[in-house]
Image (cartoon, rainbow, N blue to C red):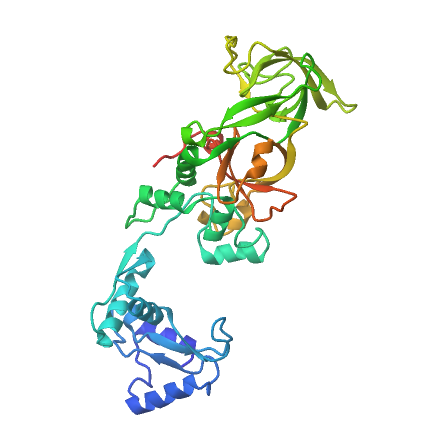
Length: 433
């Protein structure tokens, strides 16, 4: 029968005219199928169950079909291949599976799963199929069909693109197996379809990395600061805590000198009220260091700010005996003469809407700002970073070293920000497990 005839007969509950062939004839035809004698689509092997079964999957389902195609393991050795239900059931039995966990759409397949195990008279123990709701996350798609569209149409940079929620994509982004296990444990399982906020996964990652990641100073968008009253040529080595959540990680030395870089986002020439970062005639504390005050703003011919000239309060050193002054703002920095350049890839959510699957045109919601690449200035201690460790770039987020890194150039991927900025943009509180 043709594929179209097979589908129509099963839908109408009609028996195939070949249904009562003899065992010998069926065996002969199947051996010839296996030998590659017939073209694709001209023969199938079907289970003889019940053409009128209420469950359509029991209406003499196809078990094997002909497909003359090269296989990545067996090359051209085989010309017949099993259908999913047949292969799934026998694979579970052969591999000693006890609990075969499927998504809810396979609930109607379970009677066929059980029929195959019973019909073959397999010695126990036999597996059992269980169905649960699939994991659906906001701001992404989980369908393999849609994921392969993203890859094939080059809307992402392959299966391991850190914006993809594939295992390889999550690994490259820096998500650990322990964080994923914790996430799965916290959300639990359900029999009802539901949507899980991506913020729950982000929170789980932050919770782990806050305890385990060492801190480093990195400036993503460098703006030069000159401390006009700090001695020319002098360099201090300040102490910085590696991880305040874990004393065993100890401390490190951070160089401090007359010329620094701060992040351009930490300065505003005309700030709004309650702005506690650096501004003209305003003061902030440099983390682990001193309080500085902005005296002069230097601009280029186009009016862009290129340099800030500041005074440093030399009696305000963090942890010092004379450090009694307090200011509301604290910002991060690096010493200009000691910092090195690294490529930092700032990954964000791949889609701009929480449920891109809700409409047929999911690709129209791709976030054009899901990746920003910057050249950052990094403190010297980060040069010793190892791929298996995760780091918090202070005030910025958690980062992992990308495999593209070389001996002469580091590449970093942002795993997750320190806060759920999307919840703020949407005017809602972020989800928590």
